[in-house]
Length: 270
Ligand SMILES: Nc1ncnc2c1ncn2[C@@H]1O[C@H](COP(=O)(O)OP(=O)(O)OP(=O)(O)O)[C@@H](O)[C@H]1O
Ligand SMILES: [Mg+2]
View 1: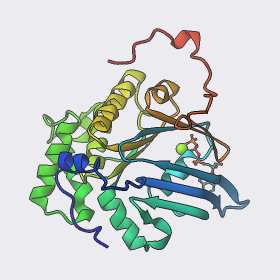
View 2: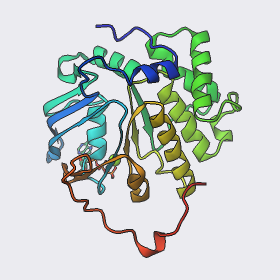
View 3: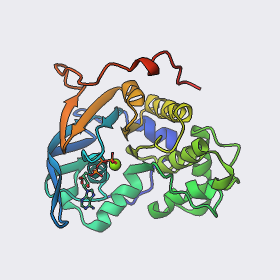
């Protein structure tokens, strides 16, 4: 396989990701997936989950705590393997890849954004982002050039030498998003990316995801925030390890409750 070849510069690759030959196949395929954690007692976190994500989609997963969202994100992101069923990313069957091949797949095709940012505090913003390319085998000078490109995509090109602790929460999350983007991934997974941010900053981060989506990036976001979920192109709701609603299913009727009176009339765009 050719996973270790380094990808092109960020915007070009995102553009290329829109084109998929004559017979496009879903970028992500999750087929009858279950996950049982072998704890004492064992926990069944996913019970037969199936869906696909096409290139260029912006998908939001919502659901109560414990419904299996993070478990599913770990499986989609090849950080863990299902107990049964199949996960295919860019057409590659996770089941058939070794741990080393999965690491290569993650390094070259997948970007991650987490609630806690996970930035190295002693390193500059630029190096935090450039390190996203370490495992893809890109030389240092090119890593830094691409990191600057990614920082400009998130509006932080003016602060490459700042340390994370000199930035606001929203700016830190932008750095984490730049790090996720620097390898020109085919798909970006974000687990509660706005969970540590105030609502206005969270909405701004979502606006950034929308801009990236417009560039052709495929993004899957887990969120507790129903205002944010309502803005996403496709919404999938989970309950007790199963998908109970998918807005891509045209016949589906949304079980989302009507907005509460106190949350109406707010302008979330800062
Ligand atoms: N490593 C583990 N070992 C055992 N059980 C686990 C493990 N990780 C998660 N679980 C259980 O699996 C179920 C789903 O957890 P998961 O973290 O996927 O939920 P979630 O929807 O992401 O919740 P939250 O919104 O609180 O983040 C829960 O019952 C949880 O306790
Ligand atoms: Mg979770």
